[in-house]
Length: 267
Image (cartoon, rainbow, N blue to C red):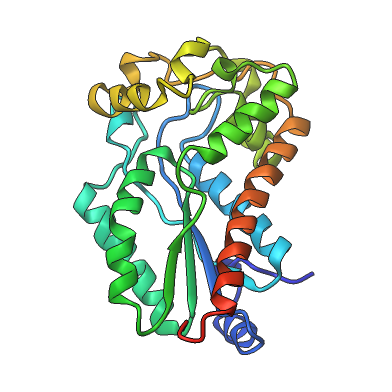
């Protein structure tokens, strides 16, 4: 079976893969932060890697660079085990990360965030990184915005799981996904509801809820660190959620690649 995770490959295997045409790199921007009493602090990192690998397997022409972490997690610092980077440090690390890939010969670099706290930072600064590297590679952010979250919420609603239970942090969604990716690190005996009222996650309020999290800290919204309700989560649902997220990202990449195929000026 072909391997796609660069951190599990030797440098010669990576070189050979690139010589065979795999000059597109994809990586997630994860985090090391609390995820309630039932999930590990590496949840966003484990899930980011798993999603990226699924995208690579769907496409067949991508190598997965290691998930970048820690991330921007100041709003979780009230909980032990959380690590955070200052905004300016995160941006500089992201720039050096992309520069390293471009210098190695990758012609397309795609990034996505598996942690909500990184999204706005990446969206604000990746255009400058793309410009700085434009002579070497094309740099893109995919899977951004609220689209993926709303798609997952819609899927779960069809399966009888309310938006408040689905949540955005350590709730049903992430717990179900972790039951697929690293079930050995999930303690369902400690899973319990956190902030799980539907109104908190409604489309018209989600930005305000997010701002409250960033400015006041998640602990003021949910003392146990859970935004959602993980009880009852299953690996069966988690498998479908992971595939949904991977399909969305793979679809974005396919659209971009199709457009670039008709652009003779593309790198």
